[in-house]
Image (cartoon, rainbow, N blue to C red):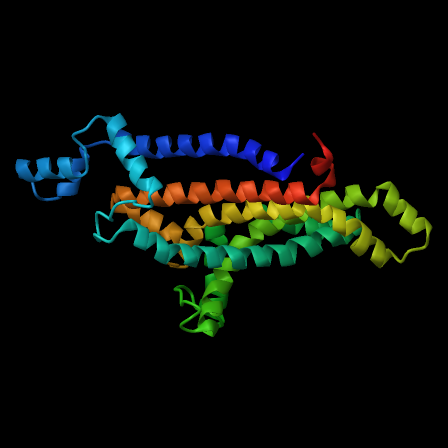
Length: 317
């Protein structure tokens, strides 16, 4: 199968998905209780002011027309302006997205550094104490709530030991050392859950690969076990793990809300929470839509990586 045909088939599913997401996001705002124009007017109860707000934001038009206007502006990159700060939402997104991307990248690095070695050790020592401990840690990483783990780490490393700051964020271009110290704890908190997922998938893929005929042949030829594991088994076992990593990275981008709140990191998650509490509809719509779009595109990227890494798909019709 040609790559372009594979991508076209995925896009045939992804485009309607994004359209449905946009409809859902816009519809949820319409279902909120109360009159949006009165809420935007605040303490101003002048009927003329409320009417002006309705006209400005097209609230006096039918819902289908409102959606069409909103979607047309979104497709051109115009998300409107924040109702609270009067700053264009596009500028808010541009300032907050890099923070969340950095947090997601650092979290993924933590997850890969923990999950892949733990999965290899667990698979090569199946049934031993190492396997039991690795599975227990993976289950713990999947089960422990991020906000609880974050608070415990703050109490230990920031309050008790004083090694790391409890909260805040410093951009890397201002002070790289302080940036790393502020991002370390939240990256570890987010990365533990993904590390558990990657560990279990790596273990499963390694066990399947270690039982393959070519691995048994390599062992029969007296190939050292280290080369059997790292060269023959791991290379093929990492194919599904690579695609899983791309999907999990998208989940990190859209799922860092609680962690950013706990550590006061000014990223996408905090922007979303602030928008909800301030009833800043334009910000909430933009953050949710951009997060969903990034997640869908990263899933597409994961599918492409899997296609390129799997010769059976390239050879199918």
